[in-house]
Image (cartoon, rainbow, N blue to C red):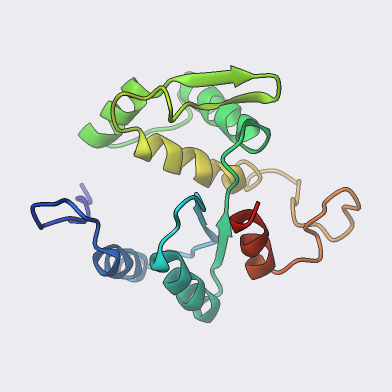
Length: 171
């Protein structure tokens, strides 16, 4: 079992960005991970994201915001659900993950589905993070390259990761 990052030790429960940053860098280094992307919800993104962008550049990590609408999240949500239903995903006996999965409620609208943060009465942050990760992971074992420069329909094809981040931050 890998354990959890201690993110808040004071009585007010404020998240310590330094603790999270150090935990991530240490975890990646200790396990010799080859990071492809760090994906995040840009809403109220903290200086932690800026630090990850700087560190990511030096380590060839791409740091990318994921828009939190159903247009962006339908495919990764459906892909994750399919892999869970077909038992192609395995995870440790993690109480936080199980709690988050049990409390996740799907929102359906005219554009698709996503985990509904507004309806969640309990913490679902882990599920949100997994779906954000699947925003890119869904392409990893396929021949589809969402960054292909030949894709004339992709409005972000000529944008750097930073330009894309700025676009979604101001969206």
